[in-house]
Length: 280
Image (tube, rainbow, N blue to C red; front, side):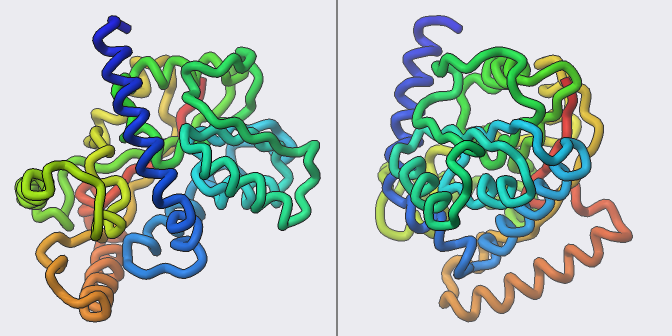
Protein backbone atom coordinates (compact mmCIF):
# COMPACT_ATOMS: atom_id res chain seq x y z
CA UNK A 1 0.00 0.00 0.00
CA UNK A 2 1.42 3.42 -0.98
CA UNK A 3 1.86 6.18 1.56
CA UNK A 4 -0.92 8.19 -0.08
CA UNK A 5 -3.30 5.20 -0.01
CA UNK A 6 -2.43 4.48 3.63
CA UNK A 7 -3.15 8.09 4.62
CA UNK A 8 -6.44 8.00 2.71
CA UNK A 9 -7.38 4.78 4.50
CA UNK A 10 -6.62 6.25 7.93
CA UNK A 11 -8.71 9.32 7.18
CA UNK A 12 -11.61 7.23 5.92
CA UNK A 13 -11.50 4.88 8.93
CA UNK A 14 -11.65 7.93 11.19
CA UNK A 15 -14.90 8.89 9.47
CA UNK A 16 -16.22 5.32 9.81
CA UNK A 17 -15.37 5.29 13.52
CA UNK A 18 -17.00 8.69 14.04
CA UNK A 19 -20.21 7.64 12.33
CA UNK A 20 -20.59 4.30 14.09
CA UNK A 21 -19.65 5.75 17.47
CA UNK A 22 -22.32 8.38 16.96
CA UNK A 23 -25.06 5.89 16.15
CA UNK A 24 -23.81 2.92 18.19
CA UNK A 25 -26.96 2.53 20.30
CA UNK A 26 -29.18 2.88 17.23
CA UNK A 27 -27.43 -0.07 15.60
CA UNK A 28 -28.19 -2.20 18.63
CA UNK A 29 -31.82 -1.07 18.79
CA UNK A 30 -32.63 -1.79 15.15
CA UNK A 31 -32.20 -5.54 15.73
CA UNK A 32 -34.72 -5.48 18.59
CA UNK A 33 -37.09 -2.74 17.47
CA UNK A 34 -37.04 -2.45 13.67
CA UNK A 35 -38.27 0.92 12.44
CA UNK A 36 -37.95 0.38 8.69
CA UNK A 37 -37.83 -2.44 6.17
CA UNK A 38 -34.05 -2.18 5.88
CA UNK A 39 -33.85 -3.14 9.57
CA UNK A 40 -35.73 -6.34 8.75
CA UNK A 41 -33.30 -6.99 5.88
CA UNK A 42 -30.39 -6.62 8.34
CA UNK A 43 -32.08 -9.09 10.67
CA UNK A 44 -32.45 -11.53 7.78
CA UNK A 45 -28.77 -11.00 6.92
CA UNK A 46 -27.81 -11.96 10.47
CA UNK A 47 -29.89 -15.14 10.29
CA UNK A 48 -28.53 -16.15 6.88
CA UNK A 49 -24.93 -15.63 8.00
CA UNK A 50 -25.43 -17.63 11.19
CA UNK A 51 -26.99 -20.44 9.19
CA UNK A 52 -23.95 -20.49 6.90
CA UNK A 53 -21.65 -20.44 9.95
CA UNK A 54 -23.38 -23.42 11.53
CA UNK A 55 -23.28 -25.39 8.28
CA UNK A 56 -19.63 -24.73 7.45
CA UNK A 57 -17.85 -24.27 10.80
CA UNK A 58 -18.13 -26.75 13.66
CA UNK A 59 -19.60 -25.51 16.93
CA UNK A 60 -16.93 -24.88 19.53
CA UNK A 61 -14.55 -23.47 16.92
CA UNK A 62 -12.81 -20.13 17.28
CA UNK A 63 -14.23 -17.41 15.06
CA UNK A 64 -13.41 -13.77 14.36
CA UNK A 65 -16.22 -11.26 13.95
CA UNK A 66 -14.58 -8.35 12.15
CA UNK A 67 -16.64 -5.17 12.16
CA UNK A 68 -18.65 -6.72 14.99
CA UNK A 69 -20.73 -3.60 15.61
CA UNK A 70 -22.97 -3.77 18.66
CA UNK A 71 -22.29 -7.50 19.10
CA UNK A 72 -25.68 -8.91 18.10
CA UNK A 73 -24.27 -11.46 15.64
CA UNK A 74 -21.35 -12.25 17.94
CA UNK A 75 -23.76 -12.97 20.79
CA UNK A 76 -25.86 -15.28 18.62
CA UNK A 77 -22.68 -17.13 17.58
CA UNK A 78 -21.54 -17.46 21.19
CA UNK A 79 -24.92 -18.91 22.13
CA UNK A 80 -24.42 -21.54 19.45
CA UNK A 81 -21.18 -22.62 21.11
CA UNK A 82 -18.52 -20.68 19.21
CA UNK A 83 -15.57 -18.94 20.84
CA UNK A 84 -15.79 -15.37 19.57
CA UNK A 85 -13.27 -12.58 19.11
CA UNK A 86 -14.93 -9.36 17.96
CA UNK A 87 -13.08 -6.42 16.40
CA UNK A 88 -14.42 -2.99 15.48
CA UNK A 89 -12.90 0.45 14.84
CA UNK A 90 -15.65 2.11 16.87
CA UNK A 91 -14.77 2.12 20.59
CA UNK A 92 -18.38 2.71 21.66
CA UNK A 93 -19.44 -0.36 19.71
CA UNK A 94 -16.87 -2.46 21.58
CA UNK A 95 -18.19 -1.18 24.90
CA UNK A 96 -21.71 -2.16 23.85
CA UNK A 97 -20.43 -5.65 22.96
CA UNK A 98 -18.77 -6.11 26.33
CA UNK A 99 -21.88 -4.96 28.18
CA UNK A 100 -24.13 -7.15 26.03
CA UNK A 101 -22.09 -10.29 26.74
CA UNK A 102 -21.88 -9.46 30.46
CA UNK A 103 -25.66 -8.91 30.67
CA UNK A 104 -26.26 -12.25 28.97
CA UNK A 105 -23.91 -14.16 31.32
CA UNK A 106 -21.59 -15.39 28.57
CA UNK A 107 -18.49 -17.07 30.01
CA UNK A 108 -15.64 -14.50 29.71
CA UNK A 109 -13.33 -17.31 28.64
CA UNK A 110 -15.40 -17.73 25.47
CA UNK A 111 -15.11 -14.21 24.07
CA UNK A 112 -12.86 -11.19 23.62
CA UNK A 113 -13.37 -7.79 22.05
CA UNK A 114 -10.79 -5.43 20.61
CA UNK A 115 -11.13 -1.87 19.34
CA UNK A 116 -9.02 -1.10 16.30
CA UNK A 117 -8.38 -1.56 12.61
CA UNK A 118 -8.06 -5.26 11.82
CA UNK A 119 -5.07 -4.58 9.54
CA UNK A 120 -3.15 -3.01 12.44
CA UNK A 121 -3.85 -5.61 15.11
CA UNK A 122 -1.19 -8.15 16.03
CA UNK A 123 -3.35 -11.25 15.80
CA UNK A 124 -1.57 -14.56 15.17
CA UNK A 125 -1.83 -16.09 11.70
CA UNK A 126 -3.79 -19.32 11.17
CA UNK A 127 -5.67 -18.77 14.44
CA UNK A 128 -9.36 -18.80 13.44
CA UNK A 129 -11.57 -21.52 12.00
CA UNK A 130 -14.07 -19.02 10.68
CA UNK A 131 -14.40 -15.30 10.07
CA UNK A 132 -17.58 -13.26 9.91
CA UNK A 133 -17.26 -10.01 7.94
CA UNK A 134 -20.82 -8.72 7.90
CA UNK A 135 -21.38 -5.16 6.72
CA UNK A 136 -17.61 -4.64 6.66
CA UNK A 137 -16.06 -4.67 3.20
CA UNK A 138 -18.07 -1.74 1.84
CA UNK A 139 -16.19 0.63 4.17
CA UNK A 140 -12.67 -0.43 3.18
CA UNK A 141 -10.45 1.68 0.90
CA UNK A 142 -8.16 -1.31 0.22
CA UNK A 143 -10.55 -4.22 -0.18
CA UNK A 144 -8.00 -6.66 -1.57
CA UNK A 145 -5.44 -5.88 1.13
CA UNK A 146 -8.02 -6.35 3.91
CA UNK A 147 -9.20 -9.66 2.43
CA UNK A 148 -5.62 -10.89 2.23
CA UNK A 149 -5.13 -9.94 5.88
CA UNK A 150 -8.24 -11.92 6.84
CA UNK A 151 -7.00 -14.91 4.84
CA UNK A 152 -3.77 -14.96 6.86
CA UNK A 153 -5.79 -15.17 10.06
CA UNK A 154 -7.72 -18.24 8.89
CA UNK A 155 -6.45 -21.75 9.43
CA UNK A 156 -6.04 -23.88 6.28
CA UNK A 157 -9.52 -24.82 5.11
CA UNK A 158 -11.04 -22.07 7.23
CA UNK A 159 -14.19 -20.28 6.08
CA UNK A 160 -14.93 -16.61 5.52
CA UNK A 161 -18.57 -15.51 5.56
CA UNK A 162 -18.71 -12.05 4.05
CA UNK A 163 -21.34 -9.63 2.79
CA UNK A 164 -21.32 -6.72 0.38
CA UNK A 165 -23.89 -4.36 -1.16
CA UNK A 166 -24.96 -5.04 -4.73
CA UNK A 167 -24.12 -2.21 -7.12
CA UNK A 168 -27.25 -2.24 -9.31
CA UNK A 169 -30.48 -2.63 -7.36
CA UNK A 170 -34.15 -2.74 -8.07
CA UNK A 171 -34.69 -0.50 -5.05
CA UNK A 172 -32.47 2.15 -6.68
CA UNK A 173 -34.31 1.78 -9.98
CA UNK A 174 -31.21 0.31 -11.60
CA UNK A 175 -28.88 3.18 -10.88
CA UNK A 176 -31.13 6.24 -10.81
CA UNK A 177 -31.01 6.11 -7.02
CA UNK A 178 -27.26 6.72 -7.13
CA UNK A 179 -27.82 9.97 -8.99
CA UNK A 180 -30.43 10.98 -6.45
CA UNK A 181 -28.15 10.04 -3.55
CA UNK A 182 -25.23 11.98 -5.01
CA UNK A 183 -27.44 15.04 -5.30
CA UNK A 184 -28.54 14.73 -1.68
CA UNK A 185 -24.96 14.36 -0.49
CA UNK A 186 -23.96 17.43 -2.46
CA UNK A 187 -26.82 19.44 -0.93
CA UNK A 188 -25.82 18.29 2.56
CA UNK A 189 -22.13 19.04 1.88
CA UNK A 190 -21.30 15.44 2.84
CA UNK A 191 -21.96 16.24 6.49
CA UNK A 192 -23.28 13.64 8.97
CA UNK A 193 -26.40 15.11 10.46
CA UNK A 194 -30.14 14.91 10.94
CA UNK A 195 -31.87 12.26 8.89
CA UNK A 196 -28.66 10.46 8.01
CA UNK A 197 -29.67 7.91 10.65
CA UNK A 198 -32.18 6.69 8.07
CA UNK A 199 -29.04 5.43 6.36
CA UNK A 200 -26.27 5.47 9.01
CA UNK A 201 -23.72 4.36 6.41
CA UNK A 202 -24.33 7.51 4.33
CA UNK A 203 -21.08 8.97 3.09
CA UNK A 204 -18.85 6.16 4.37
CA UNK A 205 -20.01 3.12 2.40
CA UNK A 206 -17.75 3.36 -0.65
CA UNK A 207 -17.89 -0.07 -2.35
CA UNK A 208 -20.58 -2.06 -4.12
CA UNK A 209 -20.39 -5.22 -6.22
CA UNK A 210 -21.87 -7.44 -8.86
CA UNK A 211 -22.04 -11.13 -8.00
CA UNK A 212 -19.28 -11.99 -10.46
CA UNK A 213 -17.12 -9.07 -9.33
CA UNK A 214 -17.48 -10.10 -5.69
CA UNK A 215 -16.36 -13.65 -6.45
CA UNK A 216 -13.42 -12.42 -8.54
CA UNK A 217 -12.29 -10.16 -5.70
CA UNK A 218 -12.38 -13.08 -3.27
CA UNK A 219 -10.47 -15.25 -5.74
CA UNK A 220 -7.76 -12.60 -6.10
CA UNK A 221 -7.40 -12.61 -2.32
CA UNK A 222 -6.87 -16.39 -2.30
CA UNK A 223 -10.39 -17.61 -1.49
CA UNK A 224 -12.63 -20.09 -3.30
CA UNK A 225 -16.32 -19.19 -3.14
CA UNK A 226 -18.33 -22.24 -2.17
CA UNK A 227 -21.77 -20.73 -1.62
CA UNK A 228 -23.60 -17.47 -2.35
CA UNK A 229 -26.89 -15.84 -1.52
CA UNK A 230 -28.40 -12.53 -2.65
CA UNK A 231 -31.21 -11.03 -0.59
CA UNK A 232 -33.20 -8.00 0.48
CA UNK A 233 -35.25 -5.38 -1.32
CA UNK A 234 -35.34 -2.15 0.68
CA UNK A 235 -34.50 1.55 0.63
CA UNK A 236 -36.60 2.37 -2.42
CA UNK A 237 -35.47 5.95 -2.95
CA UNK A 238 -38.70 7.23 -4.60
CA UNK A 239 -40.49 6.50 -1.29
CA UNK A 240 -38.20 8.58 0.92
CA UNK A 241 -40.45 11.63 0.91
CA UNK A 242 -43.39 9.66 2.35
CA UNK A 243 -44.32 9.53 6.01
CA UNK A 244 -42.57 6.77 7.96
CA UNK A 245 -45.69 4.63 8.45
CA UNK A 246 -46.82 4.88 4.81
CA UNK A 247 -43.34 4.19 3.51
CA UNK A 248 -42.97 1.15 5.78
CA UNK A 249 -46.20 -0.44 4.53
CA UNK A 250 -45.43 0.08 0.85
CA UNK A 251 -41.80 -0.95 1.16
CA UNK A 252 -42.67 -4.08 3.15
CA UNK A 253 -45.14 -5.07 0.44
CA UNK A 254 -42.50 -4.55 -2.27
CA UNK A 255 -39.86 -6.44 -0.28
CA UNK A 256 -42.12 -9.43 0.33
CA UNK A 257 -43.39 -9.50 -3.26
CA UNK A 258 -39.93 -9.28 -4.83
CA UNK A 259 -38.55 -11.88 -2.41
CA UNK A 260 -41.26 -14.30 -3.54
CA UNK A 261 -40.62 -13.56 -7.21
CA UNK A 262 -36.88 -14.12 -6.66
CA UNK A 263 -37.62 -17.75 -5.80
CA UNK A 264 -38.69 -18.41 -9.39
CA UNK A 265 -36.93 -15.68 -11.39
CA UNK A 266 -33.30 -14.50 -11.02
CA UNK A 267 -34.18 -10.94 -10.00
CA UNK A 268 -32.15 -11.40 -6.82
CA UNK A 269 -29.11 -10.29 -8.86
CA UNK A 270 -30.63 -6.82 -8.33
CA UNK A 271 -31.31 -7.29 -4.61
CA UNK A 272 -29.67 -5.20 -1.89
CA UNK A 273 -26.86 -7.47 -0.79
CA UNK A 274 -24.78 -10.53 -1.50
CA UNK A 275 -23.52 -13.03 1.09
CA UNK A 276 -20.62 -15.27 0.14
CA UNK A 277 -19.10 -18.28 1.88
CA UNK A 278 -15.45 -18.54 0.84
CA UNK A 279 -12.77 -21.00 1.85
CA UNK A 280 -9.04 -20.53 2.29
